[in-house]
Structures are given as structure tokens and as C-alpha cells.
Image (cartoon, rainbow, N blue to C red; front, side):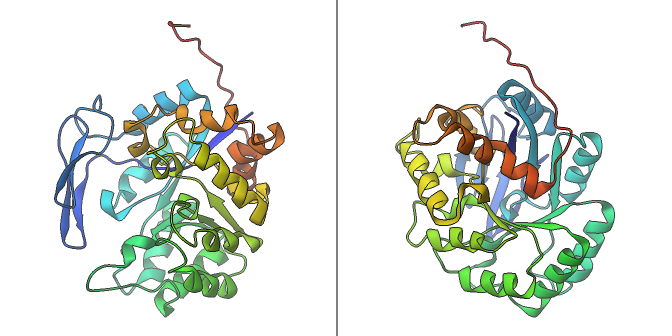
Length: 305
């Protein structure tokens, strides 16, 4: 089984703000996040640098062949670093560019990102709703960008606000750009009301749903995340397992669990068939992201076994 992580993050340093509040890297894996000190990444990453090399070590250990690296406004724009990563490790990472979505030249920005070699563009849609401003996903500027992406065959990785708040906007986008490949992130936020409305967007032929952050959403019940498995089963009943993909939301999720645990609960579940596990953990992602020649990673026995 080839395993693909469809939702991860990398950065050299967090130094930004969102909604008027700061995000800054500290030491020992901690950050100032919207005015509060939090454990942003595992404490052994002492310099705050969430690098590709540390992630690759985790991927090799967990036998994850490739990963899609998305972006979040709370991490700051990482376009330069992610372009470097994709050029250095082309067989292991697909990286997404990110525009300044509060600007008025999105089509130009996206065109420049595509020209540099990005295969996808990430939009943290839930971050476009702030106290004093809201960027609509179906605005004229956004639609120009989406049409360019559709024309260039560049995929969209997007996370949405809780529930169905942004679903009508996404329906407009899908209607205007039916050939745009879209991955809906965070599995539609299954611990929130009306989450299946996000999942049902995958009834459209080029829309898939990925589970980045699902272990965080079910952190209160912890491993083996029975609630998360039930959500996967419910989503599969709604749109078909062939439209669902695994994502970890690395590295934030592995402050509580290991990277391998972020998918191991799927392998151990008795609620899913072996065929469904293979589809969810890799086969669907290979089809959506058009991945070929994935690396084989051997299992390395733990010293404690």
C-alpha cells in the first residue's frame, strides 16, 4: 500500500499576524498564537524551524511515500521556501503556492505562482472571514483566479469555515469552473454542525475531500479515534470512498500523537475494508494529484519490538 499525505505544512519561521493578532515562533516548539503561548510543534524542534528534512524523516519512518504541502495564513507566506522544497525533493513533495487574498490582483499573483512551477494553490478560506473584512470565494477577483487555475490545470486546496457558511460560495465556484480540481480540507470539520454540506461538494466530479486535522478534531477522545472513523464512514456513505483522502495536518497534530498514529488508526479499524483503506490512504490521492513512480519505503523495526 502506498500512503500519501494530502494535508501538511512546512515553514522556516512563523512571523506574521491574523485578524490583528500576532503569530511568532519561539523556542522548544512553542509559538505566540493570536496572543497566547501554545505548543505549536513538537518540543524536540527546538529552533522553531518546521523543515522539510525533519518531515522527510517522519515520512520515511511512517512509510509515507509523498506529501502535499498546503499553506495557512497563520504561518505566513512560505512560497519561496516551498518552491525550494519542491525543486529539491520533487518525488516526495507537491507544494502549494499562496496569494495575498486581501489584494486585488489575484489572477496576476496566481499566474506568477504557476509560472514558477507550483502545481496547486492553497486557500485557507476560513481565514478570509475577519472582524472587519470578509473576502468572498465567489467574488469577481477570485473567479478570475479560479478560471486561470482551471485553464492551467492547477489544483485548489481549500479549507472552509465551520459548517455550511461558505458552501454556497463554493457551489458558485464549482459551477463556474467545473474542470477545476478541488480538495476540500479538514474533512469538512466533522465535529461541527452541517459538516456534511462541505463533504457533499464532492458530488461534483472534480471535487475531493481530505482529512487533514481530523485527529485534532477528535483529540478529546484520542487514539484510536473511533469518532473520526465513524465520520469517515458517514462521508463515504454520502459521496463514496473514492472521493476521500487521508491528510495529517503535520506538524501541529503530532504534538499529541506520533506521525504514524495519524493514519495507523485507519489501518487498525474494523469498520473499513482493506480496499477502502487503500483507497483512502493513497489510491484516491494518486488519482487526484496524478502521482506516479512513488517511492517504496521498507518497514524498519523499532528497537523496542
